[in-house]
Image (cartoon, rainbow, N blue to C red; front, top):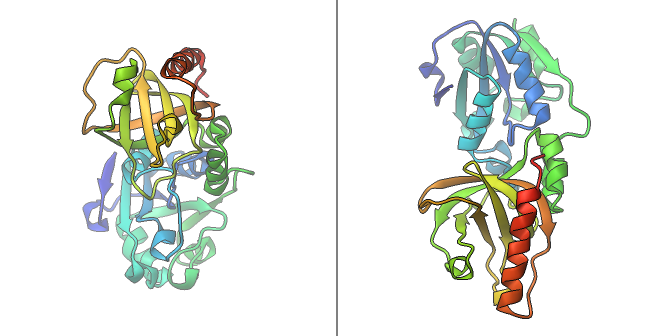
Amino acid sequence: MKVARSVEELESRPRAAAIGTFDGVHRGHQQVIAAAVESGLVPTVVTFDPHPRLVLGYAVELLSTLQRRLELLAEQGVEETLVIGFDHELQQLEPEDFAHSVLAKMGASVVVAGETFRFGHRRRGDLALLRQLGFDARAVPFLEGVSSTEIRRLLHEGDAAGAAGMLGRPAEVEGTVVVGDERGGTLGFPTANLAVEPQLLVPAYGIYAGAARGARAAISIGTNPHYGGHERKVEAFLLDFDGDLYGQRLVVELWQRLRDEQSFKSEQALIDQIAADVEATRRATRP
């Protein structure tokens, strides 16, 4: 998939453009994107970074990084994506100007978006306006009950399976592998310690079964209370994996929350519980 950062980087071609932030690329987003893919025109996504709500001063916990969002869009069959930098200048742009300088300029004749999509200064633009401007603007109905807000709520509750049902795939946590306290190695379970971008959502504390890099993984999210920790850590023990992950990006799937994090009466009790978590991870089913 080609990724452009300005409309000038895209050739003017007959396109169907799906517009939206598409954080998490959940099943509702996928329906919008599918309408563009199935149009017979060049399936194109117009998306925004950073998230508009962040620029407007609202707190938003993102479900995916931009890099991961683009990977997920490509998996949906999108051929080209325009990532528009969202700032206060863009916020002030009149919707007619956006339609002419972006959509028309790239050759989009079909525009698809969710039913309540709004754009432009004071959110004055909508699909009806685009129709008045000559576009074939198609509203895609909401998928009932599916939203980024609801997915965030489920993940805060540790309901990885419920979130997966809305995402159409397992929930994920992503970060760069950094040096940790290396305690897992001394216990016989070396873990990859993730540095997670501060704006990304991290699910409820606990122990999860999941996967990363094609291997099953037992994941710990929390403060390591057995050792009196206070700083949140995200650590993954990749089963049957041998390799150096330091400095690398790691996307970890969360399949199932196994238990709460806890303190133990002894080091051996902790080791025994980790071993049980590993066995539970071997038995876990990908949602």
